[in-house]
Picture 1 (spheres, rainbow over the protein chains, first blue to last red):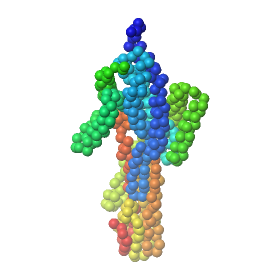
Picture 2: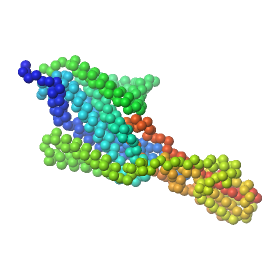
Picture 3: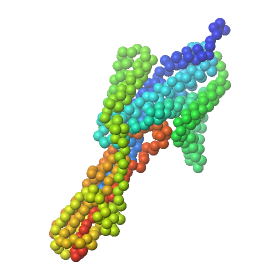
Picture 4: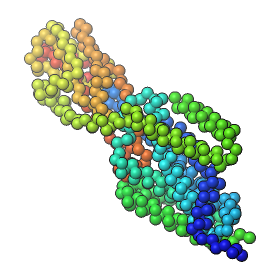
Length: 247
Length: 217
């Protein structure tokens, strides 16, 4: 029994600071993935062309879409990693409980999402510089003719998607940690269900993606993303509370 | 080119890692130094990009109004040649011609070739007149008409040769915002950007000359 009464807020803050220091390996993988994403983007993310009379016109589109997608994958896998035993054990150097552990994980993932999202957006400029410097094609659009509100809105949405990927990974990781069987069952069920839904006439997967991606309103996108993340994290927290205490 | 850039990137990344490993002992500090360096490098890229003249091109040049071109085929078919603005005449050939027969040869023009129209009721005498009309072709707001080669025409004895021009290949690069930005603006990555314009090679021959062709439509 400890004579010190530890406040939850202080504990979460300390744990978050500790995690930011000790989970630094996650950020080195982010840099490597984003650099790879930029390299993969050098061939363009899309191409369109036309041919009529005696002219043939082609346009190659460059964008950091691949970097954003790789950042989402990074967030998803990193969140799963955080739920593994090796990472969970680190929490026990503090006087801790499941709630403080989960809260500090969520705050850590929020910070990681901001870093991942912002660097993903900024990497688009690195890509533009590389293409502009080394490629000879004539430029049509520089992709900079957006309003400031659209830039800020888009950046927030990127960060939110990264956070959402973290939430999905964290829930799947939490389910997988409940029982050893789930480590195999969860990916099988997730991939199997997705494939089955794709093969069947049901458009559930498409609808689920469109629910987020086709939303043009910033506020609605923000609300959809935020509440989905809250739902996923709540489920993950509830599941982790059901686990046995560590001996 | 992509391969060279790939190699440069990998060499730079490995060199930085080796340097950090040599001079910074703690793994945590190493990663934080790498992350800080990466963010500073990306911010520098933003700065450099906006200093380039290309970056501000879209703001400086507002979208040019595309001109509404007349429907050339209809005007030429109905004999309203005078209605066509002189600006659409790209090339003109005039040959004195006194023979009573003319053979027109246009090899290879049947596949994506230039439309050839022949007119005999024009009041011409002892002369063959060939005009190449072209209305503007656009890629987005860029007028690419002048990049397109006109056909080559040559009259030798009683044969008029029409040579299909070589294909003009135009390549453009476009930067497009990432998908979450496109989501908010509602813009698609592949908008309909092309307008081919019209190309017609209009041949005026005196009405007393008999015409034979190879494969003209």
